[in-house]
Length: 179
Image (cartoon, rainbow, N blue to C red; front, side, top):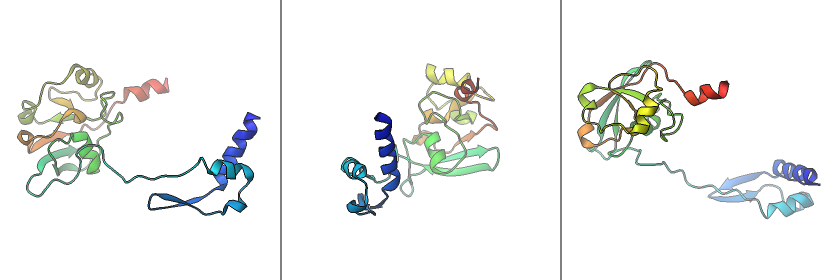
């Protein structure tokens, strides 16, 4: 009986189509054309959309208030962008379509957002946490000025920072899955 209910649910999901307009669902098929199972499930199913919102302060800085960041990429060379104060380098790279992986999305669970900081700016950064150092130990091409991009938060004294993106990354979690 449970498999029949599941089959009816799956069939009704495939049969009912909707058009989303201004955060509400408009059924394409009239209720009379749907099966009894679809009609009973229609009351429980709805599609709701929310406006797109970015996590954190990524976005275009106000004119004259942007902080300069230069990423030196293996493929394209130097790319200079402007950041808002409080933005981390991983989110900024993603916002500006710069190829910096960030597999764990900034949760300190990988080393794929590893960057090599210009020595002039490395001394201005706070000391890395134990968690960040643990992840950096797994990074490809580790140097004395290596940091994780997700942990570098832009502030005024970092205006003009230069970071180099290594030519490769090492995602240990992915390597564990393949074994």
